Image (cartoon, rainbow over all chains, first blue to last red; front, side):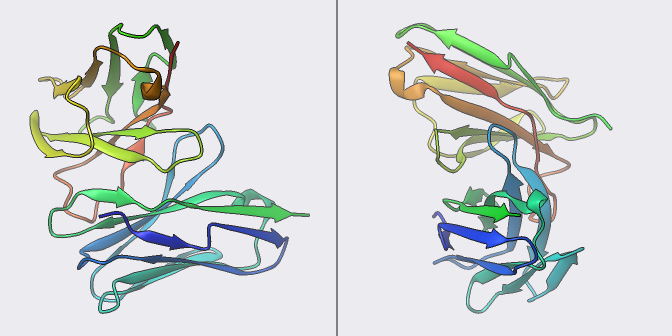
Length: 109
Length: 115
């Protein structure tokens, strides 16, 4: 089952923050986050495993609430390079990775 | 560092023709995934292979088939092509069976256009 992402799109000015949410109706083993620039391949950002961990890479971090079957991606002090479509991918016990519909982030100067 | 190689990058076919897409995973990655991405859509999982055996199947049409060879490269064979098959086809690889803690490394995709 495909996870649900929100919002569908967000427009930011450089330096602003944003949160992208990902929720699933099934029990999750892990959540992946990828970013895709137009016409390019998705690029891996991070994986969160069940256990409610939080990860971060510079000013992009994420949390995973196993009980709520939700994950959130936090973009802090956004940069122009953060523009792209962010996909969450969720894995249940079957380990099949299903992607959400994506959140398009546009960062403007 | 070596990445996932897909060929061809672009492919134009007519309706009812066949197409073969190739994917060469990162060395020592034994799991390969195929995704189809339509314009403005999210990647849709088609099929995956682990150690040359099909490990999972998604929304792959019966007209499509795939396999993973002894050198771990994979091929997606598409027959009786339809206009709706026009999309970007991504291959991704990861080390080991998808146990949840291995990121997927994507190739640059093959853009298939069916006319």
